[in-house]
Image (cartoon, rainbow, N blue to C red; front, side):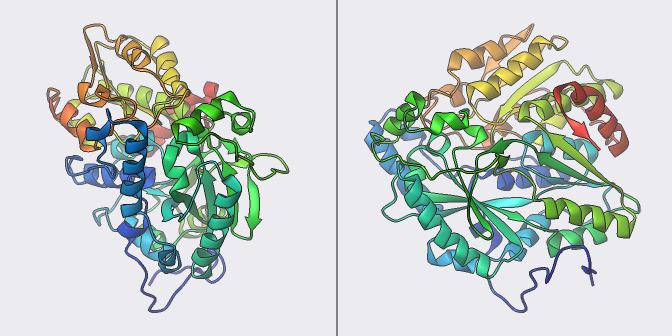
Length: 476
């Protein structure tokens, strides 16, 4: 029996005999946390991501007229989204158990919790430890929704959050209305990011049963901020998000960039009237709840497992520090460390990266800012003999999205091999590519076996401190 007293908050969300929706039905298809847990768990079992698909099979419509493509995308999203009634059937404990149960039950030299980031999956695999998210995303139907109606989205989302929180008091629900990153889908479904306010029971059980004595617990925290509206206890709302490639001011009604985005999503933007935001910006949708961090520290102190926090100011900083860490790790094992793969979004495969002895750099998405981070890091790094680039098409048009010439410039840093995946480039940016495409590309790389022995957590933390401190990465 796992002891929870004093470590996970009042009442701990215990529900005797409650039957909720299965975790794989609740967690949004294609969401970052879902993809990263699946990829990390497979890698720890010595398997790749060949069976991972993608929720939107829209590649065949990349050349269709915009209204046709938008309608098809909305229908596809509706098929996998929760209904309004199902919001009350969500059981956050069951979701946590679904995440934790994907990992092999054995002893681990540590565990990595926190915000979703592709480099976190690669870091976990190098250490031979699980990665678990501190929250999960849901997509819920929005009947008669409008991409240019943020106030209506808030009203609808508040009702959904109230249903969800009745049975899940351990959650905080952040609603994100972002036409810049979701396009027309922002008017068809509501996006909710649910965060645990303390360690869920399934995570506690994994820590107790699977951690080696004295093994550390690492907590990865996305430190980006964004203007937030408090709607009701347990529910907050934000318009736009850092991953959109825009700034908060770009979501003002007079913004030319916003007008472009809304036009691409099928709206003229005339009804765009966002709720007023008061106060200072707060942690954005991928942040970690303060109570969750406190419960990690309390559990570690009680059970004699040291805890460490990795505070990430921007995704590119952790991507660069992890890529440098991989290069040193590979070279310490007698490998060259001169072959790079630049991944993007869901296009990653940690096991195939290790099998091929490659260095991974992960871009959060296909925005210009994200790709520029890769360019700056490459410009300041020792040259790579080969660079393979896997751009994930965002499925929409936006002035913030990087063009193919910018992706080609990234590949151009390779001294002998410069490869941009043609399947991902075909129909870019409005096409769709399954997660397994990364596996197909990486399987074609030459093997570099045996794989290096796992890196120690102490060595990884030291490398992150050395490689990321100047860019604001804080390891404590």
